[in-house]
Length: 357
Image (tube, rainbow, N blue to C red; front, top):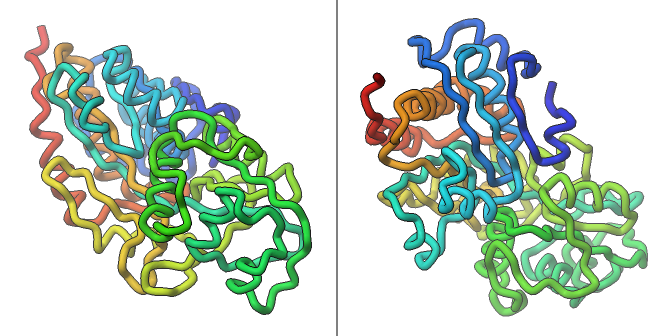
């Protein structure tokens, strides 16, 4: 199955009885990259909802191969994940945005960023009778900062000269929690529409009072789905899951690009990877690259203190970097580029785990 009630709630609890996609079941049945059976361990994690659909399937499939390991991933947003990781109340965490330097300094032990997948952030809308809408960065910036409040605005018409646009009022849906999706979306606007977008970038920004906030990507998707005239930024997996309509977004090369995993992969190809495996594919220069392509990482401590948990984390990462990359497109995520994947695999070996008693 592609989604569960847990997906909608932004909370994932993986147990022996969890159903997984047909692709995941087939991969698990054919054997895991971690053929050695792991000792019993329970891993708790929290964080980004952007990659939750992928983690749901990856964790479920990993469980089929490693029945003694349970992984509980609670959503809550990237900000919660980074805070829980800093407070050491989880074994690892998900984030779509890197720590700010002042926040990284609060993490009291060395840690790694492990990239997992990437995906488009869609600009999804609900406007009866209007499909295939084109939106430039300046127009998106004006909509989300409430400089544009109706769908028949001249700026939207300029992007869509042949469209029949109604005078319907625009409802802006955005995240209310600390969100890596928000950070990547506002980073795009800061880069691509610097003179128009004045609200800054970050996991939270000072949204206009008449916008509607919701927790998690699924929450924003629900507002858009339920509200005629609504628009919101939603990860591709959630937007596809509930059948949202999304705009073609103008990229750095001047082309209007439909969000797809293939277009996200093209954005990854031109990204510079830093030594700590962070990278920025936003507003990539490729002619066919989707401009709001977001990365995501798992935060993992370099030195593990529990042998069983440490080996389970390494096993799960190795699974993500083999079987997980095959699974990613089945739930609307793009796998990592070959070069980044090679570096990520090598970094797993740098995690130190104590000898089991």
